[in-house]
Length: 286
Image 1 (cartoon, helix red, strand yellow):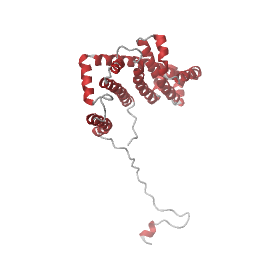
Image 2: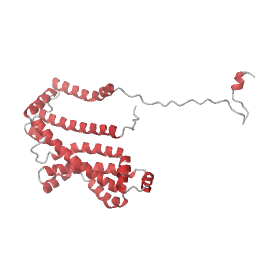
Image 3: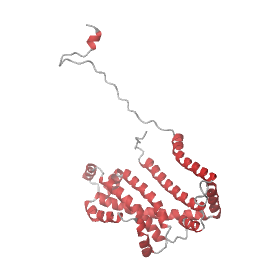
Image 4: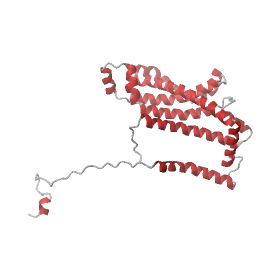
């Protein structure tokens, strides 16, 4: 019998088949993208917008009465910086957003843990919180002005309310998804409820917590814009109101870009926290 016939699978049923060679699988792992290339790709969109803005302003297609040119915006920023108005307004706005964010995150985190970890807490609090969550926070501005006046309290509380609910929803969902068998296992070793929450529940819900923090930080900037419209005499919003009265589109653009930059920085902070607190997470994007 020839060698080819010996290696060919026999036609008789039940007869032993040919020898099968197992091949070690080779997982196709995504190649890490060079850092410089990643930054260049991220910069394409903003640079394209900047180029289109510059061309439209230089060609006259975009009137300065509608939107100032990039050069005029830089001149306005230099003017505000030299006079100290920009740094002072930025400091006030950051303080408002930071205080409101801290209060809102703490409130949302606490309520989320109570409703997510305790059935009694969910039955007592969740329906009320969900009812309040459906109220647009912008509709609360007149009511807060009546309750807290036109001082800083109304602005901080408005930002806190806006940032509390995203944190609450993410925390409550993340705590509910904690492995119950793991919780029961650590309880069998005598670990108390607070220790279980601190050592097991919160670390397990960390991805959801960071997602909620990301949304809350973004909303803090949005709420800051609304809060500084409450008869404000300082902050970026006050600069916008003053610029609107004098039709200074260059200063208006500076303020709008400042808000956008604050939101971008807030998002970047959460991304850094994700890498520091969860270094084991491997992205699946290619």
